[in-house]
Amino acid sequence: MTYSNANKQANKQANRGWYAILRFLLSTVISDTVFAVVMALPRLSRSFTGLLVETSCLIHQRTFSVSTVAAAIQKLTRVRVVDNSSLGNTPYHRSPRVIHVYTKNGIGKVGDKVLLAIKGQKKKALIIGHKMPGECMTPRFDSNNVVLIEDNGNPTGTRIKVPIPTQLRKMEGDYSKVLAIASSFV
Image (cartoon, rainbow, N blue to C red; front, side, top):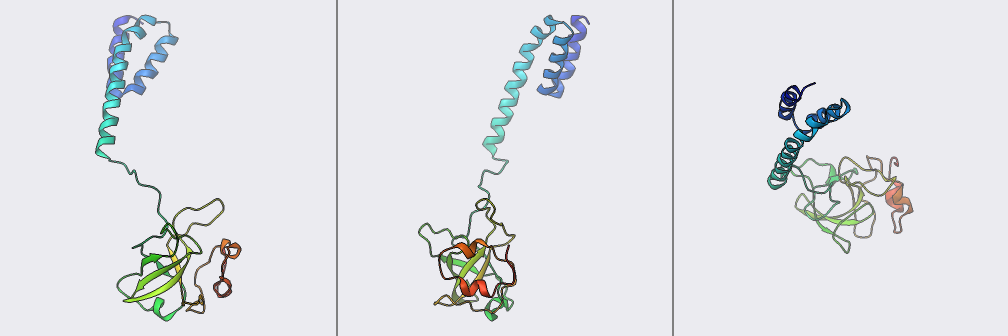
């Protein structure tokens, strides 16, 4: 292979991107044309520079997501009532929204109590599942599930329609009545 043929092939490969050039250079080194490799190094550095410029433009334009996976339940989060209480089952044009989370940091996870705005009323609820991935071996749900409870902790409904996580059994707190009306566990 002569230098001019190697140069023509290097120009064709440069149009296809730096990966193809690198592959071509490796094949050139293997075939003992070291001179062609030395001559192609400036092209390789230019293509790396172009790649860096394109990457910095992408970062500047933010064409990709930089947000975290999913936050747990916090203020103004829409939730789904999964018990058979009359207030949670009647259709309404808006799903219930969290207006307060009873924790120190304001982020609710499984077993935490929240205050909901549901059909113009304020009701307390217990979180029994959320979308955010939790610790190892804890289930992640497709929706943010809550069960309506009264002020003393008794559930309003008589049956929970979705499976609830078994970690609720191990948690401290009085969840025995909620666990008693659960249909299944995950």
